[in-house]
Length: 220
Image (cartoon, rainbow, N blue to C red; front, side, top):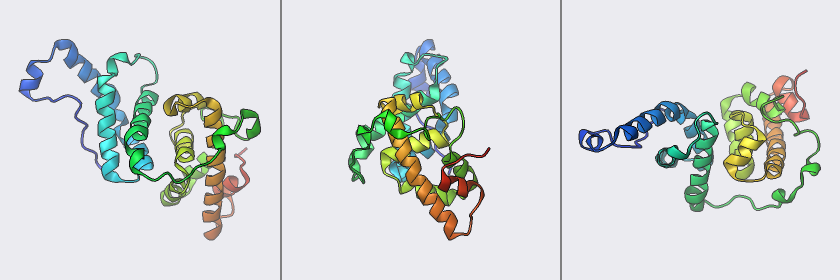
């Protein structure tokens, strides 16, 4: 799907004529650095809203807010994570209110030590079995499985295993402690593992990435 270019500042002659040189340079820098992430942000917005129209609106609103705050962004730091944080905050504050919450639980009460060693690695080191399965199983299976997971778990898995963010980056994006990220990722990966293993069994895929997902192991 081809997304329309987000409008952060009007470019017609009248508007441009009253913009300062600094403002024009800021706009051009923002568009140069931020627009390459539009497709990734739209994919994340689709995971959140599950609706193409809402996803486009969410991305548009994200870019408008990001441009308004771009002067506060520290050049040289992680722009992608910064944009995802704005996207997630906008979703939580606006679009989530329109939806029924599918899950209410106590997963956030888990402590780090309760998670065991299976999830001790971050997305920047060894990849999880779920990330390997996402690479090897059909997109439709992965999409259906992710959509079946409660929202907070789904976003944690998406940010870690699809986007490759570290625990700290996910914590910054979702504005939660690292321990909460770990608990959500642990539970989300387990749910995803069961769903993808079931998909593999139904289609006779007993080895490779699907089998790793069921056992929770990674390739040697």
